[in-house]
Image (cartoon, rainbow, N blue to C red):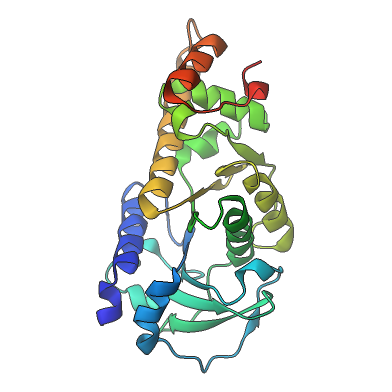
Length: 273
């Protein structure tokens, strides 16, 4: 299909496959979505169909009315996306109220968009406003080291932010706003969607305790790279914690302030106390 040659679809397939290769998507774990640009939709409209009924999203996202999203399917395996994208991916359209969606392409063997659709769309809704329309990718996966830390660190934004900042010099530059943490909640529903989207008003990274991570970015490379950086930092921290009870030396608050000055980023002082 010519539609599968579109750059945004090829890039989407690439990051889902790379995430699977990294071990972040066991079985049918994880999900991803991309808010499609208007010019991209115009280019692929001949491949879309509009005969499916609308279904309820479960949340209201009025600022996304009329938008289209490329998104992974519920219960679908990331390892199969590369070879069978039309069976495992969907393009959906949001109606004029922002409360319903319909399938316009994909899931050719049946199914629905990811069960985390409410969280994805609420995150997109927040990021569309907060980033002046620039953020278009939401990526959710299950990186082992990030999840492991949710069993041993206090589930507090400041603790996770500071600990992960200290593990690698690039971290405060890559995620200067910090990291938000959601206490354990049943996934897939309205409550966890609301909690996550509230954090996304402040951060580009939200960790779900004992579950995984959500990241937001302008494009596929930025968003995937954000997950890579957080997980690499988490891996270093897991190793440090396994070797010693207390760090002998670390990146100090003053070091972080100097770094922020040289790289021209703003680090919240609340995380440097």
